[in-house]
Image (cartoon, rainbow, N blue to C red; front, side, top):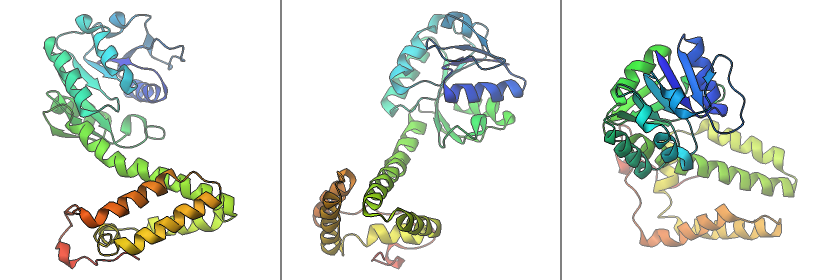
Length: 274
């Protein structure tokens, strides 16, 4: 099997090295002056890189995804599968699928569901599009934990981005809280407390956090207004905390989402968070 890599940055390099270890012939193209991974046959033009490829993997920034598929579109073999692994919106993935379909190429929207460093090719992934099942059949034997979620391009990206709202938002909240703790001289205490809470977190806690918000919105609003004032006193620009305050102000007039709880009714869940 020959795999052509578009993008030889950190993630592309890790993927390429693992593919080579698995005995795959890897070619590559990257217009940036990045190092060439050992064992990769790098070309100065994308057309040469995709020649005779069975699979083209584009590991680029979202802003470069459309440019990547177009840069050697006419030269990609008609039998090849084009896989876009960029973190792009569903709309962009659908545009990429339309471009590929114009050449009658199978396309797969691949969403990486964890960080690549430390995992490389074995990064958990979701796949969607006309080529989703082919991608799974190709990559699973190489140890890639990938699941096909549908034949509509963008469905994998949709799932990843919905998850990212919480995961990246959580990171931003922790950063803001730790900046405040650092200013207050309480970094060690707060970090230990957060680690303890997150380690013990389960579905019941998540449900309490959500379902307890509406009946306790006024109390929580006052608490978060106090948090916002505190962060101001500590010299912290409370971007995330201000957003929480605004959300709590709106809660009394908005419906909460219905949670698909495992094996229990919404009414069985405690309605207040600790």
